[in-house]
Image (cartoon, rainbow, N blue to C red):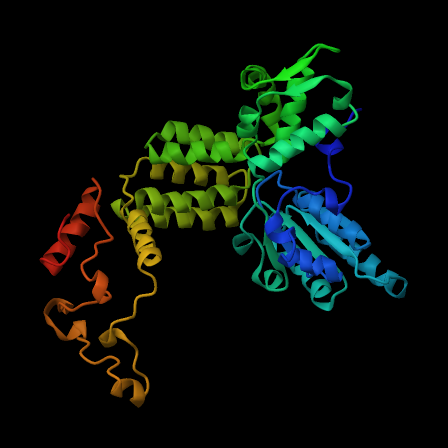
Length: 426
């Protein structure tokens, strides 16, 4: 059986690896470690198809280290302990520390991750974990503190064009065909920065041409011939980001039926329920926020509940939260407020904190005027007294502005009532 194109084109040595110059380029952090032959335990974090697994194996080859590979989907504590035991038994016969590569490490439970701690801390193994999920959420803090996180980025347009050109010229199958790459932008757009998807879809399109026919690749050809084939290609979850996008946009658009459909697609595709629940928490704050503060409580409780319950019952909890959020009033006032405030910080820089708001724990600070003139709100009627809380140069800047949500308008009205002329509607 012939290997897929993406597998055939997997680089055989580090010099053939494409992309990730921010960590592998001259003088970059991982490159410096590789140059001296001493790498830390690490987590490679990035979207699918950016080369996490390939990079892990190339690191092992480049450093001439033995590499053990486990998949978090099919491995458990027993498998981890067997590898560690094998390494310990090798002991004096090993000149270098072996590498243990764990693919999709975010799928390991706390107990499974705990089983790695001792070996990593003692230097028995060098751990390389690969994940598409944020390690801050999915890797236990004790293990994360012992690893360096390297963030891998989606491939650039230039990277993908280079990979396509190399495949046409060097692949043992493709170089026997007459292929001309006239236009590739549609193919690159379909790939979403995923090199594996790019090459596999390209191979599918090439396979639609008769044997010995000259092949000219244009955007029109790509779009015509990818429609039927991509459904087959995507059946194992390659639409991960497209579907979660449709899911969140359906909630934002208050279409509970569509949101539940996309939820079902993710569940049937084997998506990690915690990934879905985290997106619900984000949606509850970004798209609903102050319009219905209970939405965030619901989403957070959903995340905690599925962690306790597990499948198949947790699908009901996810559906309940999804329908609730879709039917909630919408507002993005808080989301827009923090965006405006961050933009102001980038624009005006680190403005000094007004003296009366500064902390004054020492006599010297008090003598310099730190804290002088600050009015303690609770000493005044209704626990409020007008005073300035912003730096002088932006003293009347208004970051929170209500949308059409009644709750947000209620908040804005109270702000204006308290502050009278200070925060007027623009």
